[in-house]
Amino acid sequence: MSIIISHELGFTFMHQATVAPMVAYYDYIIVGGGTAGCPLAATLSQTSTVLLLERGGSPFGNPNITHLSAFGAALSDLSHKSPSQRFVSEDGVINARARVLGGGSSLNAGFYSRAGSEYITSAGWDAKLVNESYRWVERAVAFQPPLRQWQSAVRNSLVEIGIRPYNGFTLDHLYGTKVGGTIFDGYGHRHSSADLLHHANPDGLTVLLHAPVQKILFTTEGKPKPTANGVIFTDASGLSHWAYLTRGLYNEVIVCSGSLGSPQLLMLSGLGPEKHLEAHNISVVLDQPLVGQGMSDNPMNAVFVPSPRPVEVSLIQVVGITHNGSYIEGASGENFASETQSPQDFGMFSPKIGQLSTVPPKQRTEEALNRAIEAMRFLPRSAFVGGFILEKIMGPLSRGHLELRSLNPNDNPTVTFNYFKDPSDLERCVQGIKIIEKVIESKSFSRFRYNYLPIATLLNMTANAPVNLLPKHANASRSLEQFCKDTVMTIWHYHGGCQVNKVVDRDYKVIGVDALRVIDGSTFDYSPGTNPQATVMMLGRYMGMKILYERPGQNGTVFSKHTKT
Image (cartoon, rainbow, N blue to C red; front, side, top):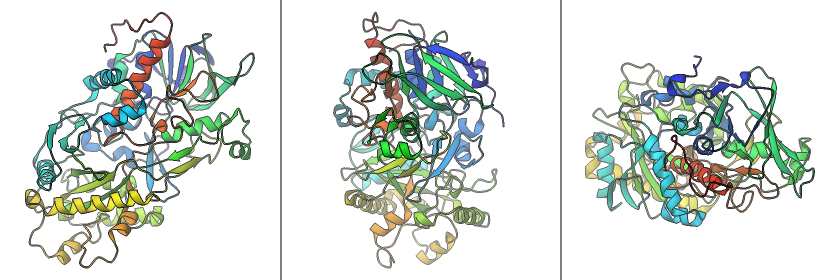
């Protein structure tokens, strides 16, 4: 379906790139209208002219994006117009990157939780401005989820088995069990980072959709080092456009294209490992061997718990934050057994969105996915009644790398995450699976598991389902370590590629060049908190405020009816 750009939202500054002038000038050019790019653009527009370039379309008016009940529909859309672009890491794990305004916050499961205080301290961020920036974001997009029976059972089970204290509903990252926030409101409507554009100054911002950037432009004339001065982008008809920075010491190109897109664009623009760039016939602006290094994806492992009673539709709401480095969460009834929607599905654990954990990663071929999707059509309704309990490890410590596949910025680069390469990550996974076992066997969870059903019957019930049951130690044919390796999936929290003190400095300025920053999850060494989206949105606002403070004449205050700190 075609998405109409809605001026009813007040976004008179949003247009298709086809109407853009061939040449234009701005104080700031932001590449990527994602989780960080939208709050950054809204903030900078208060006192400056800003161009926000998004390679995808608008999320507004697309029910596959905006409604909780349709979660997964966008991720399963493999068309070239999809808001989600599938990629497969060299590890064999199927993944996705956003291609829509709002970025990952327009596609994800919605869980909203801040980074911990230790993370904020280690990042060198100003705690007061961080808190103000979180609150600015949260007024627009964060809500308290309605906790119903299945999620309540998960919460009570976590507390029962000792993941304490119970911290109630909180957006803070605290050890113990808590109910976190969500970007879905009480009506099940998603509020992505694109909603933060409501705070933009419409006279200062231009948003162009379907505007992939081909490269960043640099000048060296009269400069001590290469200086970014513009970008080339194309529109949907394939025509090229040039956007340049207006003259001024404080004007910049800011890349917010995510952990795949940002290092990819730097390389396409001549910043990266010299030999790799030369192999692709790219003129080298700066030999920077650390661009594309340090890629990480937090491994997720999940088990399906069939339920003898109906369960509510819920995405992630409750989390157990343990001291051993694993986070325990749950999701239930995501139209698994829908009587009104056909076919039945497994939501965020469905092979339709690439989540196939019943075979090892290297065996997750397109044919295997299709077989699993076909097999679901013939499963009894009882096979879909239940929920998933998952563990995600913090960090992680394992690292990989990213390389160009082609000169087309719309193509996925090749990426290797090296899941569980570090033994500590594998040990954290094993401990997480053991905690999941305790949760399932707890008294608090007894209403949602089969107590007297023989394990053989349980296995037969889900034998053709593309999900994993909890491995039984007594007759397990593989160790928990092997279970972790064989059943690993993504929870879409990948990061790295342009990390602080390696590619960018602590002000997110690209080291070795001028007038260029990277502000997004590609700068992270570790994923913040249980879910990064809150912190990525915060970072966009936080850095926008810091950049404005640096401009002459601001005096630490931004005056506008459009924004409030």
